[in-house]
Image 1: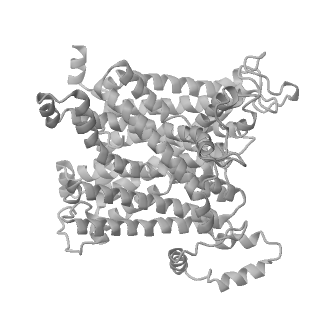
Image 2: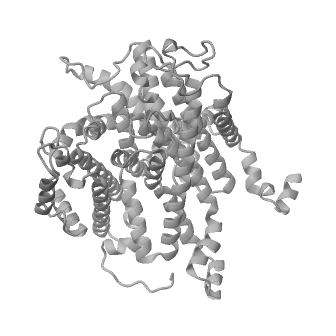
Image 3: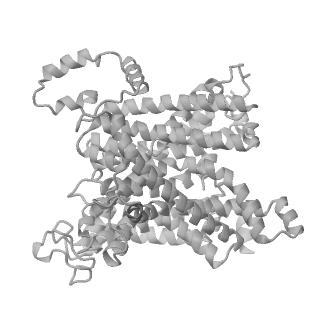
Length: 341
Length: 292
């Protein structure tokens, strides 16, 4: 099986399916990476379509709740909408409508699903961005310190602490945070994005602190583990020895050579963490009644608003695929080693 | 010296180098101890406590911890929190274990098939893995849990079908490298069937990474169950689980903080233990740490 001669396929998704790392040029890299993403999006949409068909009543669920619709009406509608056609034709039809931006309408207020998602997107992105920035800053500090003071008490505590942090349920951490910082100390508000009647930037920040801290806990742990490994790796390289021999200060070595080398893979890691950040955001938004996508998802589930649920499901997956694509493109632009394989 | 002698004659698995290394891993041993205690408490604890987990006593609502015989206090219905915690532990740990078994099974099957067959079959399987990984797990789990009837068995299945991908990836990579080894070529030359080579020759050699992934999968499954039960789509009351015990805790945070603190601590202890064990196994079985 391994010895079968490989046919000469064009440089495309086909080729990527069999061997991912054989692209010699940047344009080739881009094309290849783009086609990977397209294939991935197709698979993602197939999974989404399967979930949609698992839902009670399928795509016609909204009419099941309508008292004015009899069973007969629903059947007639199913025929009209072509729901008795073969599944694969239905899938193509559904995917085509997704592509055209027709994601259906919310049961709750009849506005288009994309518009509803758009209204909640910024809040989530704000939360994710702040907490990621915080996680990278703190995680990098812990990781670098752990690596330079290897096997010290600090390093040991950071290692164990990271493992514990990865085990704490985010919502529980949120509850504890609210208990301490809101109920006991009264420093920050317990929820929402802003005080009604006060839309100042400071007010937003005040509301943002606790949720983004809570969301960042897991990622501080991940980033610190990554930075520790990356720093140890870089410190053992020859260029660090050279720099030391030349008398470059330890601080400068860390900031320039070590962090500089750790930066690029950080972009990939950030892309890879997108699903887990979105998962954390959903939970955090619930605890802090933050008006983002996660909160919207739960509310829509509660109202059986399936078009919005489906839309968010697909949207989050697309966000992840695109995020990873962008991360890879940034890296390939900056680092010739990647695109040259 | 005795150690070296033991290495020379690895007759039993507990004499092996891996077992020796595992026994030196303090965190892993602590994890084993904590999990054993937790399982023991959940199995025999409910019989030893003076209250039943479903016994409602409205006169003793919101009793704080250590009041009378209520060691962990009571909940808004006056039910004993300790009894509920231990009954919930049975459910949560059982769901976690079963989901791990199922997801490891799926992941191993997919991984071995994709890694050994390669070509189009392998590519299709691994792209499916990528597709599933693109969904934030909780969105997928919640959407499924809200549509299918949430019984404990269904929750287990839902968690399993949304978390087998890591195992599949790890197994696929391992099998792909094992496929080229001499013993596999020898087996192929002798004329053994593909099934035999996959599951009798290659799979036993890929057990290390599978075991490590499985121990981490328990931790993930327990966490995921807690998340969806907390959000109200997991295990349904009156059946207690650590997650759904926290479900109503937020509104009583000011008056009865123990309702939130105690079940969350139980989740954290269980998940931390499994993560410690996984870490020890990884070191002991010498599995390369691909994901950070």
